[in-house]
Image (cartoon, rainbow, N blue to C red; front, side, top):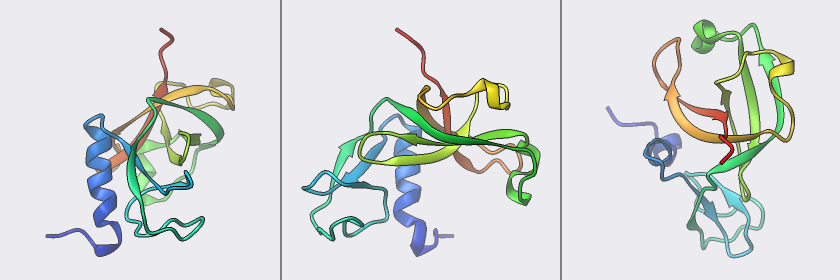
Length: 133
């Protein structure tokens, strides 16, 4: 069974992210987006190229979810975060911390990867605290 046309490029992007080869689509002006895009959502440029995704990003905002929809029912409670990775921002679940408001702060550095949702085993964008080296 093939993926719906609306997320075909996204599925390949998720596979690349899982393999440690995450990328963003970047236009000549430096605006970033994720597949499936054919034009830049900021300026309309059609010349998009793949640029590597930074190894770590910065938490811009987050919320602790205690009541979730059916696809995330067995995952609660969890921290949902929006993280800045340069030309793009990603939304995902922050794991590796206790799901409480004191466990995460705006400005925290995190790494990105792909793991499974507890509820149904489907792939999910996941952040984990970045290790200091």
